[in-house]
Image (cartoon, rainbow, N blue to C red; front, side):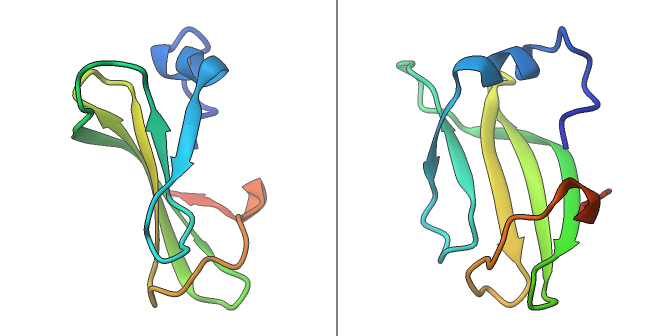
Length: 97
């Protein structure tokens, strides 16, 4: 989802030392990017959205969101029936929006 960003992008550079934690989303697979800063990160904007079908055929939406400093904030995954994600998609299974 972010592979088409220019290589000098601050977002891509931030992935080199990124840490993530699982979000409490009922097992849908969302991840929050953790930064060592004194400010509490807040959602600012969405930069990419994609969809795919889980192995049971249920539609899944994924978004990459940035925080108030334009740093990675979260990979938000939402499954249409609210059930746990069965598998992460292969690149060829993802449709960018």
